[in-house]
Image (cartoon, rainbow, N blue to C red; front, side, top):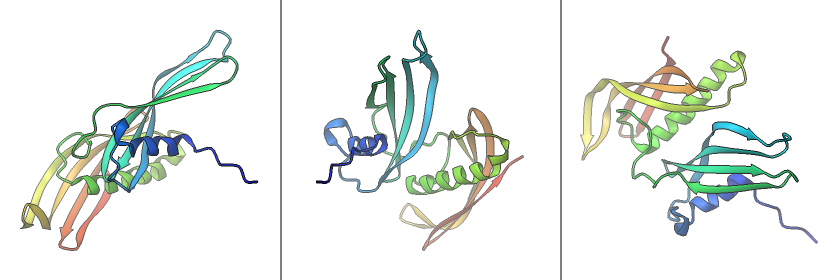
Amino acid sequence: MESERTPTLPELLLKLDASEKSGGDPSCHNRSLSTTQVLGAVEQGRQGVSTRWTERWTVDRCGVLVPYLVKFARAEDGDLDVTMQLESPAPNTAALPGSTIADPVLQRDAVGFLALRDFSASVAEGTCNSRQVIDTQLIQPLEGAVLEGNRPVGGKWVERWTLARCGVPVRYLVRFTTTPKGTTFTVEHEP
């Protein structure tokens, strides 16, 4: 007889995010865990066995970044208690701070590419596994714009995205080019 597999914590969070009762959006069928980040210090118990800590896990819900607080508490007997809750009400647009003009799906794609690029570039510098976009700035407005309704289907623009690499700001220039077939972008480290 085959036993049922216990779901992982990321699977449970994605299930929670799909539950309307819990503040999720069941209409989205494309969600994934985007980032995780430890918040604050880990509290040690008296004998170093029991601990408490909180993490922010961000779910990419159909291009919208939705933050959750995941709280861990390990008892002295080794049992681990985990609670998950929506950090704030889900936004209607992507959650990147700053003045980016990229739409939510393009933001998601660019964040994923930028994080991978930064992980590759910094692998020799240490073991930092935390990346988060902390600011976006439009530094060269859309030029050569061709609009279809309100949506640009032609043109180029440049933004500066600041990424926090374990708390250290790292800046990148993101160059966007849009056509009727879609938008492409390139990323380069800004010294």
